[in-house]
Image (cartoon, rainbow, N blue to C red; front, side, top):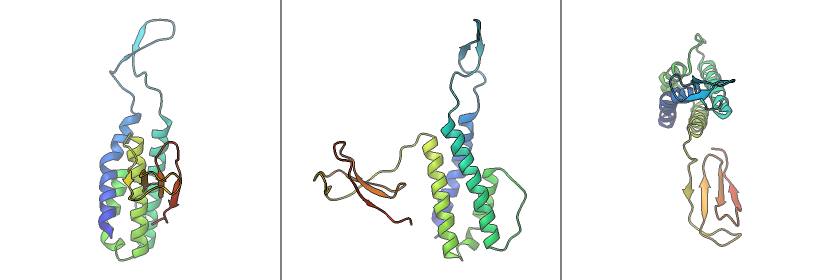
Length: 169
């Protein structure tokens, strides 16, 4: 059961620094106009708040997850650390986490959620899975599952019927 958690944790360890890089201003990039004329080095890209929000959400989520895991396993809290360090500390505990099925499921759900949030903020498209059968509303073969949303929906632009909501698992 902890194999999924290990996969999502490794994804977060690898991709979270990329997310931080998205907020780092360019040092020698393009040129922009200075007020009153002339040009100055710098970035012309506006601050992307969705990236900032994703960083905050993931950081808070990792801190809370580590605290919950350590509390549940009866371990003392450790000093504050950057997100990748905290994720490695959680990964080191996966064997112990696996002994508690409800905790293992929670860790996997949370790490999956955070890894997907990170991927979306980096521009990765939402996962989409084709579903066999026809839409009960328009009879098209355009049913798709959106695992992140937990829904099955007709992607026919004229229909957009939501077939069902999957249970959170």
